[in-house]
Length: 416
Image 1 (cartoon, rainbow, N blue to C red):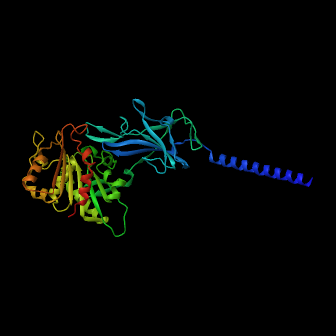
Image 2: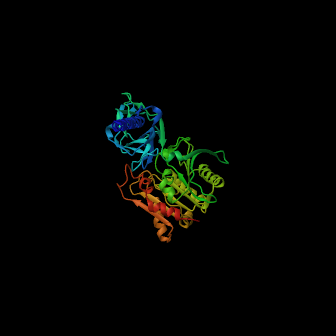
Image 3: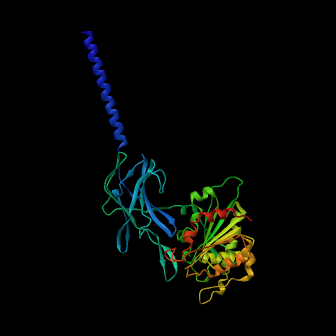
């Protein structure tokens, strides 16, 4: 009889433990599973600067807690852009979790759900070119996210409103790392400019890249000189900084109509030099490794800075520009000014141009390259791209030039 009672008590005790265990497991499951209601403050529009300018290439959803590495179907969401012509749907190429606010080649566990967009979409760009005024402006980005209910790592992202959840916050990859400043020269010339600072080590000094933009990127602190092409941001990207940490200085010419050659004419050319001098004074910059890169009008300004300050820069990369711009004739050609040959051939220069550039013809730089050969100027380099190899027109030779890793490696090897 006693044995039967003891056996019954064991059975009841075991059943009680099993019941408690089941309740505990169910409690844990309830805590892990949750419904996530999207709100606008959870959404961030992601942009990056590509060879032809800034594009919207993603949307990030801040889920508020770490989610296991997950990939979802591309049709789990819709990303739409409101325009004057109506609503345009962007192409989604992948949806995945990530531990940082930005795109990734590999999904990871993290608190962000990244909706990656096709940067080649016709409507991906953020800039609008005013042909009459000849400069770019950044358009208003009216984006919204539309979704049905979707499961992710045991959680449910609830369906949003039919018209979509507006995306009000933006994150500009790399561009966010540039700080806006203003400068006034000794002749009372005003320049907005942007400065990127590398990760600093104590008692170390760093190279300085000075980038001069083209005519289409003029403005008053509107970032367009950073957004129009890769001219500034390419030097600030993490992969580039890991190899060659450097400061990047990007002044922006104003839209004032005072100078046709926005960087070559005075007093703006000397104002750039004053800005560089002030930057060198304020930051730990290696004065033997100050480099200048310019495209189009910026390349014209680069040539003039080389002429005016022949021993200042360690190296120069003028792209789609010309020397001796005052002498440009009706055929858009300027002969090389023989007065400055020693300057051109005494410092490291790598010039780029396209054979079919009709905006700034390559004749001047071709002539200079021929003279360099005649003078055995080993520090002068010239790359000319064949006709019909650069889109949309030959003038855009900065697109391949700024992706030329050999040139980048060469530049950082130069020192006075």
